[in-house]
Amino acid sequence: MFSNIKDYNKKDSRGRKVFGCSLSSYRRVAMMLGLAPDTHPRELVKVVPHDFLRRHSAKIVKTGPVKENILTGEAVNLYDFPTPHWNRMDGGRYIMTYAGCVTQNPDTHVMNVGVYRGMVADRNHLPIYMYRAQHIGHHALAWQQKARRKCRSLM
Image (cartoon, rainbow, N blue to C red; front, side, top):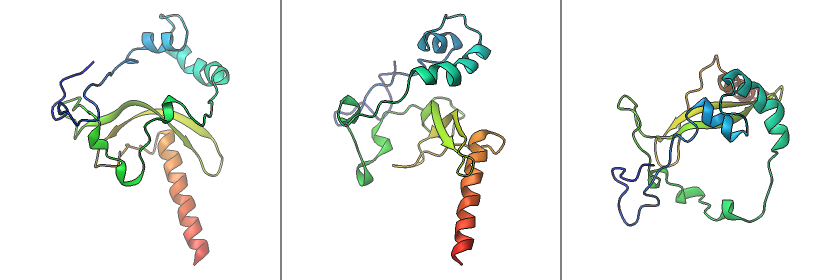
């Protein structure tokens, strides 16, 4: 738990504390999935898409705690959230450090969940490195190609 983050100790700060690294070990991920703490990492990779996702589908709700604080448009300001500078060699503050990003290929509809980092670039943008050799890069390229095909068909 981080509670003394530079620039976020003001009375009007949206948040003043950050809880991080809760799933920073295979042991913790295994326990989160309801498995034995000594489950091998290869087994974790097998379990998630086959067992865990089948048992835990998304539940759509109209109201509830998850919808109490919704910001849209000009109200979005990532600088409001306490975001540490995690590593001295980082180019900025990373608000996404172990986030599961869901992507889908627009042509094949194949989905992927990958873990990526996202750095605060400005008040409403989080760039993510989409390496072309990874699935997120394949999907990003497919979306770019689809947009080009659409533009060509409009000419």
